[in-house]
Amino acid sequence: MSNHFQINDIKTDGLRNVHRVDDFADRCGLDKKQRRDLLRLFGPFATLHELLINSRIRRECR
Image 1 (spheres, rainbow, N blue to C red):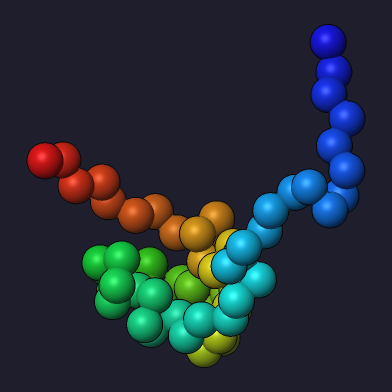
Image 2: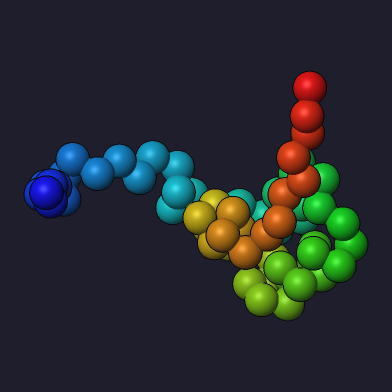
C-alpha cells in the first residue's frame, strides 16, 4: 500500500542551512582525510545535507 504526501507536509528543517566545512569537521570529529575530501568536493561552505551525506561520522557508544 502506498502513501501520498503533500509537498508542504515534508519537513526539511535545517537541511538547507549553509555551514563551514571546517566547523562541521571539528564538531563531528572527522579526520584530516575526510576534511580534505569535503573541502575539495564543496569548497569552504556546503549545506548540512551535503555534508551529512558525504561524510562518515564515527559512532560513539555509551
